[in-house]
Length: 247
Ligand code: ADP
View 1 (cartoon, rainbow, N blue to C red):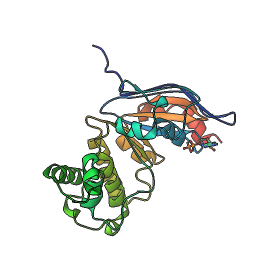
View 2 (tube, rainbow, N blue to C red):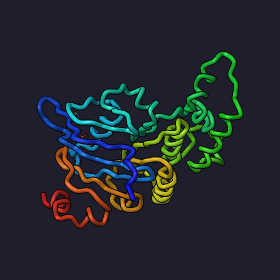
View 3 (tube, rainbow, N blue to C red):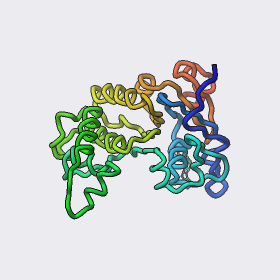
């Protein structure tokens, strides 16, 4: 038996801002079908890690292998095209368009059609939009204007917009912030569904939510990996307890 190669393999990743190492010699591996959650106190470097993966920030040293490609040398746009999707905390949906239109615009081929003078909705786009809308629990709201959706539904719509591009790795920054309890539960199920055949990398502070979704957890502290493993293992790790409770 040989373990499958991780989809994302980060090794020795370091970035310095004026000599301050926000991420310091980081190793992180994410497998296919995995929901991997990064936790850690404020300033630990979590956001910077996602910025490095999606090419928003350039690494000082180290490598990010994504499915055989070296991301540290690629441009942001090419990283998206290589199959990395990132959702930020504030959804960037088009409030005055419908759910259908938001999803349609995010389809790589659909975008060309949308920009064309003669707007044409192909069967392929319609089917993909309907499929994604079902997945994000908005199948019954296809023709609702986006600004009429609840906070949680808007977050799901943005996840759907990313899914239209069929990313192999989906990264989310605090996906349940501001959500109701029932929306949190539904989002946990959604992320687990999305991870099937893909990889999901999440930054999250809500430990109950982490527990409900994480296959593996990496704890960052001062730019370094403090602990890594199952939520149970990480939670009972004395070093982790000290960082969270010791100050
Ligand atoms: P987290 O997401 O875990 O709260 P961040 O990744 O946002 O942490 O930040 C890690 C550290 O790096 C913080 O001390 C932050 O001030 C610093 N930092 C992040 N981005 C920059 C930047 N562009 N320039 C200077 N310092 C930065």
